[in-house]
Image 1 (cartoon, rainbow, N blue to C red):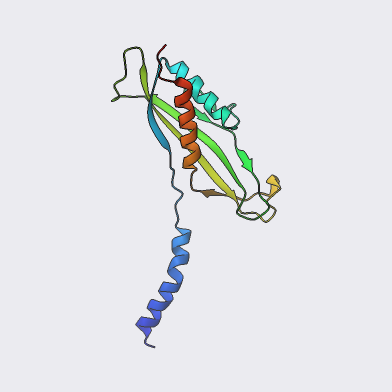
Image 2 (tube, rainbow, N blue to C red; image 1 turned 90 degrees about the vertical axis):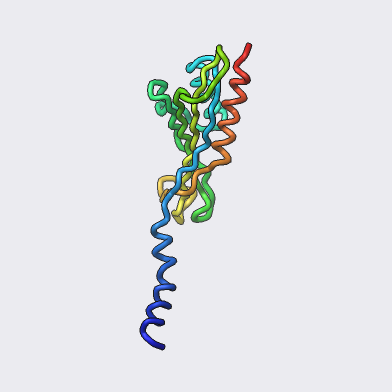
Length: 157
């Protein structure tokens, strides 16, 4: 076997390992323009929706910054890589290009559910956890977004 073909074969064997190391965690948010009577009403609906989804909302809720960062919700499992934790990162800004009816204000809402998997062999004990970033949970983010929309209704009385 000549040297260039041996080098090519070796490169093909090593390349997948390097590509796996270069994997980048992608943020996958759910985004929607939502209408509400007031910003406070949207804030309350967002906070309630996160709480209804069993995420602890506490000091990470800041109405001045228009964002909620929930606490971690653990889902432990007895096998390496099967347990995970998730948390909600929700924010909103007044919409610049959305037209809403006269008594309503439009807001661009972004909800992301960040997910980490537990790569520890002692996976049922959170104190030994080895959390590694995993792809975001888009389905849960969409569920929370729908709860916000449902809590606000059409915005009319």
